[in-house]
Image (cartoon, rainbow, N blue to C red; front, side, top):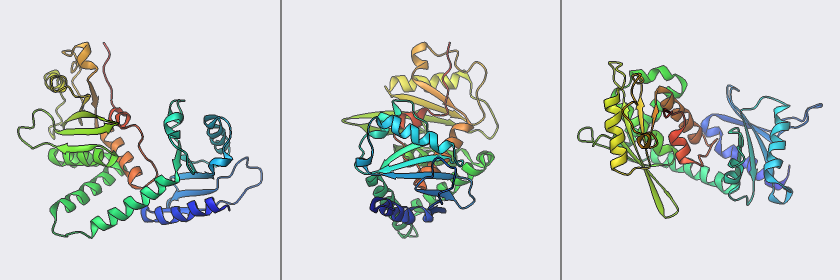
Length: 304
């Protein structure tokens, strides 16, 4: 094992056992075309990550071809859910890699990102030791427990009250990387959550409206029209309406072509997907690179 491999292995041993993951060095097996440097797996062995460590001086030629070839060789061996390449001083590789349409099962990270993960874990541990009478801390713990529950058993979402659903979704988007504002219960201006994030010197702003009616009522075109007009009038980048019980057949018929470009729609599946993404981020096994992509993931926009 090289010095770099040992350093990464030691850091992962600090990082992953805190989330219930094991880290091991697999034995080289005769006949296999490729064996990763080490493997991260959940204790029940249902989720496995193959990890390859390479110094930047050992990576030559076209980086996209290099990583794609390694992933192809990986697929010929054991079944893994993710391939993680760790290297030193690799900058902006993920952005370059994504332009080639790379698989979401492949991720490249720099050693600095591992340091950041450990710092976030330490910060999370210190947060838990703060004032035990701070109700906001208890609310966040409660939301995180709900998120884990929904990620494992999506049908439990229907047991939530509407305000708890809004709080959970606010926590989800904050965990992904947005700056989040949860609006007041009344006089919210037709939006439940405001999201923002900065790109360079500019700030992008999105709004979310959540319809979680225990009556199982579907959202109709009047509600959709009102929300879309708010998105347009406030000049938001995009709006997201989430209805846990779906939409009526004509829900989008009153929208203009321009309005359709400013709004997307989600159902229960959007919330469940957010919960699973949140859990991966908390577990340190994934880092979101495209926040707008996460905003629109598992949503749909009607086409005339």
